[in-house]
Amino acid sequence: MANRADAREARVQLPEDFAEPEIHAVEGYSPRRFQQPLVFGPYSARIQAGGDTAVSGGSLGRLDLAEGERAHAFLLTTRDQPVIDVECIGRASLLGQEDEDGGWELDLGALAGPVLDCGLRLSQDDPGRRLVLEARARAPSGWVDSPWGRLRVTPLLGYAGSRWRSGEPTGYAVAGESGTLMVVDLLNAGQVLFDPTLDARSKAWLAAVAAALLLSPGVEPG
Image 1 (tube, rainbow, N blue to C red):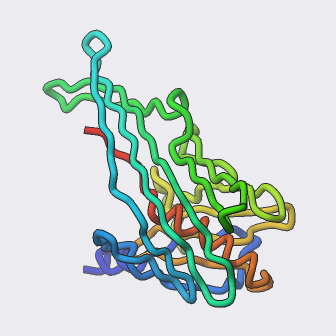
Image 2: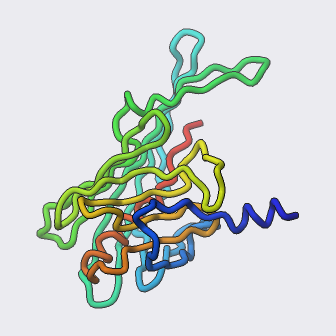
């Protein structure tokens, strides 16, 4: 029973430069229900379209190839700040083979392009900015263009208070030249953690990035 309780209470291991963040619990992430808004603190991601998945398959000799693409869009709203319009496409490309022992599977994400590609706009006249995650050896990582410059988006693989490492991201850190600005905790019901010194405009933009990461767990073809 203790192990189950620990699993339910597990949190992402925060970066060392992020000791006293402003924490918001997430509603609507896990469990995820169709068209349910994602809410954390004063921020709400209202789904406009989502769940559209295109899956295709083929073969390369004895190997099976499966490719999937999922699109979704939402509006990020909060008090006294402009609405942020977000549109995302998540992609996956898998090569594998099934046999009597269960087979194997190889993620070809690095060859298929970004695993997550989002456009974020503050208004109809805004040309938009991108959030991109690309496949890497251990976990997807990438960048996001913000109104004040490009920020790094880095996967976190650790658990708070534990030496264990995960094979999948337990969260993501978004950082600029000054250090970590936000952490998105993907464990259990989810959390979004901000640098408390950020102004309201910056937090709203980062909240849109957080919602995009929470709503884009990936595409699983087949």
